[in-house]
Image (cartoon, rainbow, N blue to C red):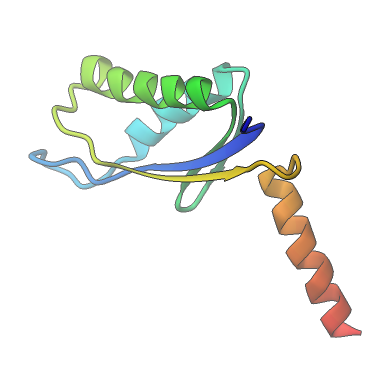
Length: 109
């Protein structure tokens, strides 16, 4: 079985053992890294959706952790990762949203 596409949501959590709970500088840093990659990424309120081949997505997540540890001196990171795979057809995260939006439009008629 070949898994064609994956979408993963990652969400670095509050830094532990620091003077502030703000993570906006860290989110900006990893978002910059994600946008520099060739993978399709979308920043949203609850994290970042990263779409692409499994190994490449996981490598990018590892790079995000490494960046925060080495350049931002974050000693502990907790990331929540949600993985979705589909083998019957190619479907992007936006495709999934479009299907639901179309059904909502039909309900409004």
